[in-house]
Image (cartoon, rainbow over all chains, first blue to last red; front, top):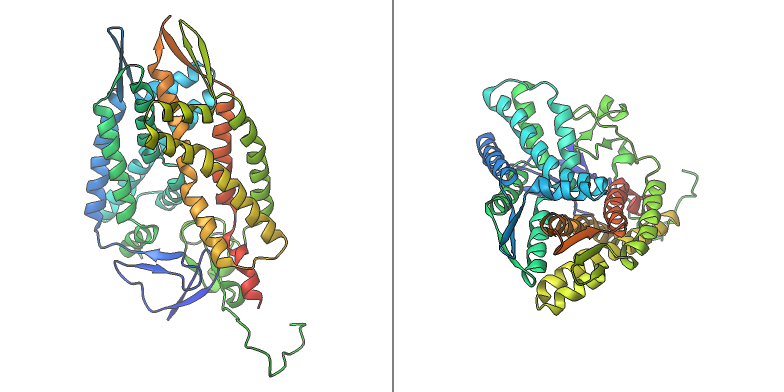
Length: 200
Length: 218
């Protein structure tokens, strides 16, 4: 018999083995004690690879096109951050870059860095630290908020000029889905179980 | 320990068995329960994060972040966050006037969305976190179930307030047609982003277990 202590209310629970593919909640405060998923390492790696391809498209191509008086202006993701920087709002530019670009990229690369070795049966150096960073970064990845923000910007401009979503916005929308799927197949507990199963 | 023994006729105490009462700790980062020798360690043996019975200075950190965010909330909503130059005129927009002009242009679902994300959610966060901090500091957490539910809602919806910052960044990048129309960021946008980031940090630095410690005491 082992004990699981709730991280949110400190209640101790008796636990007879981790339940696979389940979400286990605290009986008192309903916080999630742990969640395990039925998906394998392969699924997680496949999702991360798809996310990486979408990330590259989302950054390399324009998100939106804006047509006025015969000239067309395109905005890319980096262009959006640089625009803020050029106007003297470097902090805002950094915040946008961090939440919409850097955090998703870190999540994808850290996933691959830790999971590919797990798949091949060896240990990635520094994986514990990386997983800790990954958990800390989770609330700061805002890809879904960015997609909605882009839609708001499109609606705001649509009354004044001709605007259209471009390929990178579609890619970014799909990237958002991939990131959500990655988070759902790899709850924190699952990650640690994959790592520990092979090495202890 | 120093309490006198309860008389036999009194109702049974709701004594919850907590990690603290068993001498166990839980890592708030990777959620591992630490037993035996590990429970006395400074760092989680699994993810190497610092482990505490209760996070040190959690309440003071949360309180100061909430107060700072509450101060920033005023300029963020009163002062203009954006300026639109056209060859006819200059127009300053606050968060609220942006919502109103969206509603006027007929896209009221989007206007409603921005209204909730940019005005209601930050206000709700400040009120909820402020109330939680006051309740915990007075040790008068009467309904921990409701308060923890409220806290989790706040934690979950907080990031959506970044919506306007992202929308603004794209407007600035797109509307740069020389001598025809340009969009410029105003300083209050910084205050607005500050409210979002600080309230997120405030929620993250709060140790939820403080809400339940009154229950466990008896």
